[in-house]
Image (cartoon, rainbow, N blue to C red; front, top):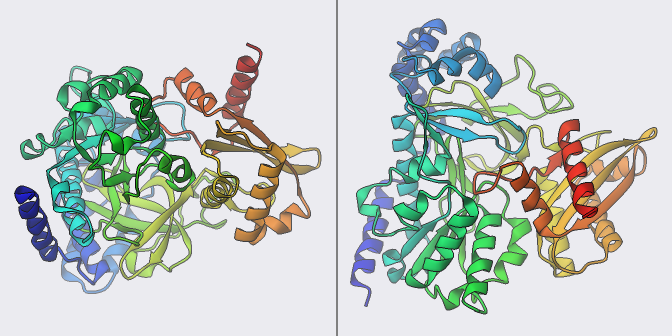
Length: 517
């Protein structure tokens, strides 16, 4: 009998009862903003934008005067504007710029749309906030009543960036997963895999090999990581030990926590590697903070409203964003109690790392506004609307998921290029699968599925959107291209839409070059 596991499970259940979410979401967010303003009021940023005055209204006024002033005084920022005006000074070692004190760590992130690395400040308060949310997520496992008690004694495999950070003299930089994993609580170390030594490995291929070699010695119950790289790891392990599925080496594997990209396109191929069904839990951990996680079975992710992040929501429409997904100077913004279910919003966040009214670049929809439950629908710059088709990444993911099931194939990656074709427009799909499939049949199915799930798409297919093409490639083509750009590992994802001319040229040139070999 798993005595320790039973104790842990009961303890988790009791702890989660004490952590019941508050019902007044706006009040929770108001309190969060007050804490942020209080910390930031004596910084250069806080003094310039009247944090003291905004905080007084938030503390002593019952209406939303505080939020009106916050919107009036503090401009909206994207990364480039925030870095050029403020964070470049933080990176240079200056204190009290947009957050109190000196920032020691910076997360390197290129996301999926930029070629150059971004330097995102990671304060000690942010590391603590991420760990707190991670613990809350573990506590939420009590709602998964069917999970066995012995699971809580098993290993927790986290496949992330290297914990050996780059020492720049006055600061350290690296992947966020590397920064946070390097500071895990001491009590968690006995469960944490691959362990500190392997976690320091910076070469991604070498890290995968080391984990594969040690896999036989571990009893893994949880896996955390980006779907594409977790799938590659499991395939390597199955091949190395000549297994039929991953449960032959990890019989107690019960939970996979995924995030970063939609899991649905990967699910068909992922489940071929399992010996039996497991539980999937979605998380929303970005370089700027731990924003949301799935709190109970059969639900969507819930925003973390009381842990160092103040959220604002920009209606994702033509009023607030241009055709390339660039935010206008003064967009309409809403608080958590002003949003509507089913509408698409871009996220602004203010955080304990000194991001203020910061456009994170993701778009979301509320599926349950009262519980702040959301789904991620895409990126502000990753959608196609060349002629009014309004095709979101969420639409694309659903079409690929349906195609995978219909043709019984494993589609590992895909991207779509929008292009002008004469006087009309077209989409070129690049689909990565190692299974045999009729290209034209696959294209027709994707096209027909999009017509069913997107009201605007079929209208434009009959008018301006005339050309639809497809190229089916081995999955390795996508990973090799990322490797050629120096973007391997859990923090890097292949963009679902290629819009920029330079991105399209690099991708197409790479394909021509490799095809000629």
